Length: 178
Image (cartoon, rainbow, N blue to C red; front, side, top):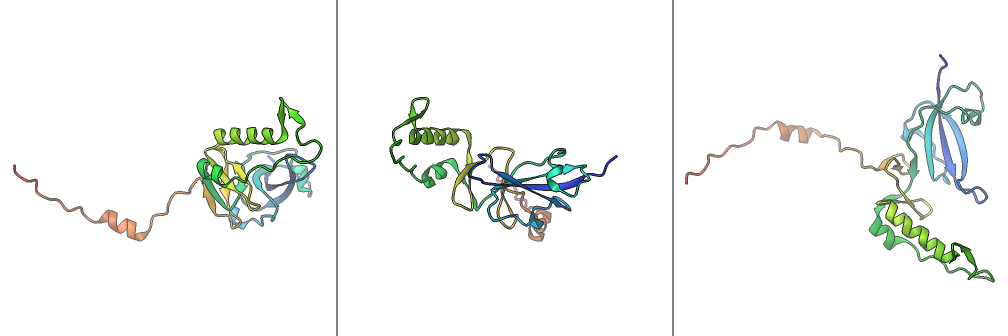
């Protein structure tokens, strides 16, 4: 049985590649707080690979045990606040400003249609480091630069005070006659 190595793949926006370009690194474990997140990365995920190659990009061809996608952001907002925060779409300019792009819609109308669809599909949005809003799917995890989880909220840790309050006997009162 081959020993699996753990990798992280950061997705970085790229003007010529709509899905973004990928930066892969080998890591010792899947601890998000230990990661050195590139400043321009928007999301990342972990995967295991049996690849023996020294090049982490060869490991991308044989991925196993892929984690959920981690989106990198500043904060999480609900759909109502995202609607309020969203910048007005800039009007198309130039000689092709009113040119029909698809389905009988101009470019600005198409942008607005995509935004309305996003509002219907997502209940929460992440505000990225660049200020953009991105929808959060149910299987996404949102973290900040320091690796702290923003969404879904991690369970609260129990403190000694909580344990003391739980262990105190409850006061019982006599029922009123009457």
